[in-house]
Amino acid sequence: MAAEPARTIVVDFSRETGRVEPRTGFLGGLRDATPDAIIEPLHPALWRIGHQFRGRIADGLPGAIDRVGRLGATYKLVMSDLIGAKPGDYAAYELAVKKLVADVGPRTSAIIWEPVNEPDISHKPISGYYELYGHAFKALREADPQARICGPGFAFPNYEKYRAFLDYCRANQLECNYLAWHYTGWDPAAPEQQKWQLGRLRELLAEYPGQKILEIHCDEWGAGPDKPGRLQPGRAVVWFHYLENVYRVDRACRANWGGPDDYLGGLITPAGETLPVYHAYRFYGSTKGQMRVTTEGSDASIAALGSKTADRCEVLLGSVSEVATRVTLDLKGLPGDNPKIEVRLVRASNPEQPLAGGDIPLVKDFNPVRLGDGVRITLGRVEENQAYQILLRW
Image (cartoon, rainbow, N blue to C red; front, side):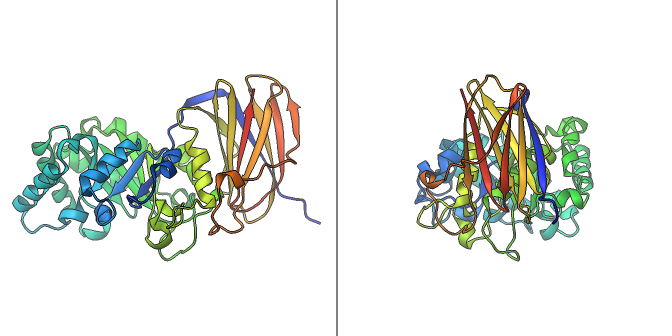
């Protein structure tokens, strides 16, 4: 009989890497009918909305921007949804940009302005987009000198495409305050496997100082319309690991393809009931402001994220492995002895079945063993799409 697959992940709570800023966010999906009480525990950092406020936010675009701000997130406005992406007259286009700024009102400096969605699809050759971007930047800064602008959210991103765009910006004295990329597949490791070198984008912040790049975003992640299915808890955790540690983005949005995904990226039902994946988001979002610590042993099939406060340590673990796996967590550098340990499991046997937070079961058979200045916890059977929250308190 073949040996049972096993994995060891080491989380060292003595090695801090900085404050946790969850890479949670959404593409559309905001509506008046969704209570703040459902959204707030997720601690979204970015909300990218073009036309999707229409018919959903009674107070229109200003109301959508205000609500996103109250929820603690930054609003990214997809301008091409509202004023088009291929103007025949650039003078008229600049007037349209300035009118849009006026419509937004005093909020203009608080949001991020994105001229065109996926310009590598809509503009061939790409030089047409470059020209439009220059006019958008000019009009925005004339309307509001503090306006922040986002560069091309390429549908097919790679490192060299961003270098070429930034070379154009440098040659034409244009800023690009945010770099953004899209990836709409299930597999979080696919961009790395296809050698897009997205993890290298951070190098560009120092190489192009005149463009004043502030952050890097993944504006769309998750499956596309040709790959239907509900996002699962374990897959969300693995994606969060990749966004933080491999692609090293500052903010991210879950893709929204309409239908079931049209309600907080598929985390809730149209009636506002929370689905299993919601709780993976909630566990992850709840670590906002905690101290992130180092983790070794995560990959594209099983990944963990560790964080701590003065009297609490926690690990979020997710799996997309098709084979059930015994996972050993070596938790090192704990701040005290004899912690109270709680392990919660978000199952994914029926991702369409609503799940209330009080119905998430506690796991009893996790076999803790003292290990020097830490604890070894063994989870005997971690299955595909499951997510675990491991809490240690003193």
